[in-house]
Length: 217
Image (cartoon, rainbow, N blue to C red; front, side, top):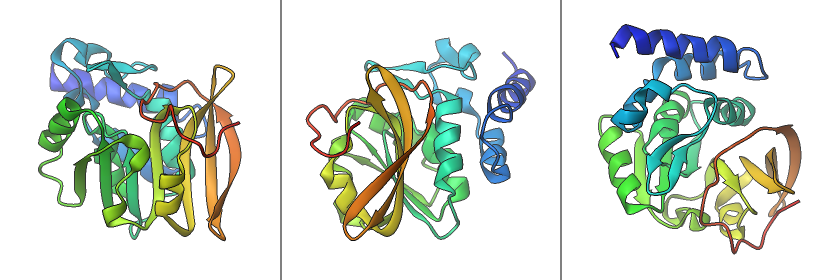
């Protein structure tokens, strides 16, 4: 499939999936229009790279659906001075998008295979750092972060991530509630996070939080 075909598919994703929902931040739309999602999926999956669901990338994992990621980024209100912790780097797609919007990104991936792919895919971006670590552990070495993005659906949000968020920082992610992925944003104050639910949105499962003892519905 040619470059122009993918360009048209990317445009269709923006029009049919992002603009028809609450993805209203023009910077998010521009970033997702710019990053070639097909370059972050296996060759056999390139034709469905822009479908409205997760795309299998191997090791039992999938790229989060464009709409789920778009809504998280829209709500995060990323700024050029943000230091972002991205949980679930996968093959690097969302990190590449976030790199257009924020000052720096630490992308954590617990699968060795996917972390290696992400590092290769993001090697030309000087404001992205990929770290192999357990998702629920985050990456304390570069903390605190002004924004934490959990790019997938988890059972609960770990205390370790809350601790790595700076005061007044914000966290966005999807939490499984009775089988429904609920998108939430949390704001940190006095060492705790208060969460607000803002949408139901299907997202791919992100492993590593099964034992998390922090927030869940």
